[in-house]
Image (tube, rainbow over all chains, first blue to last red):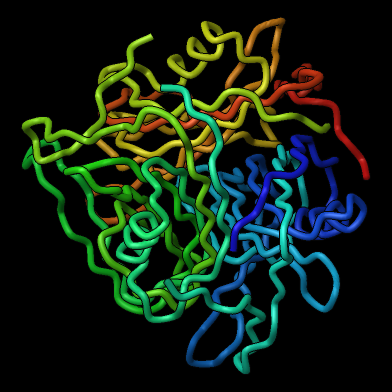
Length: 140
Length: 140
Length: 140
């Protein structure tokens, strides 16, 4: 699917916000239907998910402490008629070891967030029978 | 090298595709010479490379199972007259541990792919005598 | 804060440069006040930081050897009247293990660097009483 560039935002998320919840609210309040999201910072007690093809569900991985947010990468598209953020993270601890997964929760200590809105026919997430809401595939 | 923005694509790669091969074919079919590539998703049995300065070659690292694709990051430029994708990945397992390297292979379970085409004088990869094909350096 | 897109650069950083120092000099020489920075490549003996909320300072993590640069992600904004790069990295070793943190030092073996300039009211970093220089928060 092809898009045109829309608005660009670069901002610091307030300390104490839940990062995923903030991005969803941000998209809702700004009227963003499609976007690319990126960021760096530091998160407290992040919870990430690993999707298992066997159980057809997400395993929750609860990390304790404050982690460097090395990458926040993902997108906003439409699910159930509303903007929905799908975000993956990598996180570094005090030894430089890295953990990560599908972002479920995480309190912002610092988050420098970049949002590039995209304009065009919205991408819509639909349940695929495996507890995953995905866009239609686009074959070449 | 300075570029102007070209077309923007955001799409779901079909399940079962090899991600690297798909990006190369995508660039070829769309006539993309230069681009930035990003994505998230989930890959099966990814193979990544580590370039060793000592052996002047890539060591293959074969990962078994399905991994969260936490970051796909790289570019498309020209090698041997054709578009060529250079992509690095980070990958998370069911414990939240992260692995990664230079993407060699990986079957798509889910891949949400973003391609930002860049317009300008193409960057060309040339063999540098160490089994690496690189653009010319740009000193300040 | 909302921005308009400015110049786009994609280039290979010369081998032997310190990556963080190069990005700062690049921004200074090009007159860039705000930007998004991304890249991949390979770094020698990178040093990364972990910010501790307890000690209110960065712990230095010195990595030895050459690492795949899996993600370079961050931004340029204004600190003390000059452009200042804030960059996080993830790094892979010969086993595919991944390490990372706030980029402090790292000699470029290969670095393919993407800089997207942003035009608008500059974001300014100010000391927050905890040895962190941060932009003002932007509540929703």
